[in-house]
Image 1: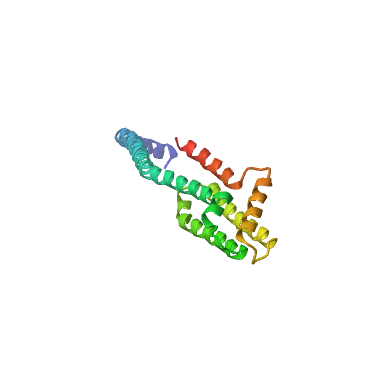
Image 2: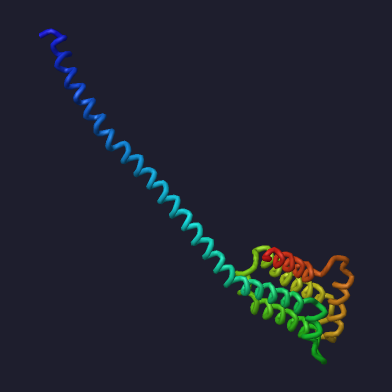
Length: 191
């Protein structure tokens, strides 16, 4: 059979198939467009609702945690004040104490105060907490160094004078005051 015979019979079949495909596309394409549009709108709506919910939760959490954070800053500020050398010496010095007993009492007081405030680290920045820990460690180290220059059985007053002289001779601000300033700056950023 000649090729033209196949083309003649194939054409109507090909046309019918093309028409069928076009007929199917006529119904499927608009449905697909409607589906994609609806999907996009629903997805956008749910994303917006999720953002609103997250914002509301952050606001509520902030409202609940802000007083706790402020209390933590207050307690750490008080801790810095309580371990400043002058205040610490006034609180710990007892009549008749030896330099060695006084040294131990100072260090014990610093550690107890620190341990009392250790839970505050979850409410303040890492920089503040690191600074608080460094000040505590530096103060204990300085007390130990200064105590080495005083006889263990000397009166506690001798050691207290040496400690105060050490910090008074320092040209820099007390490390405790530096941390206090950091705390104030961080609290200002909260508002």
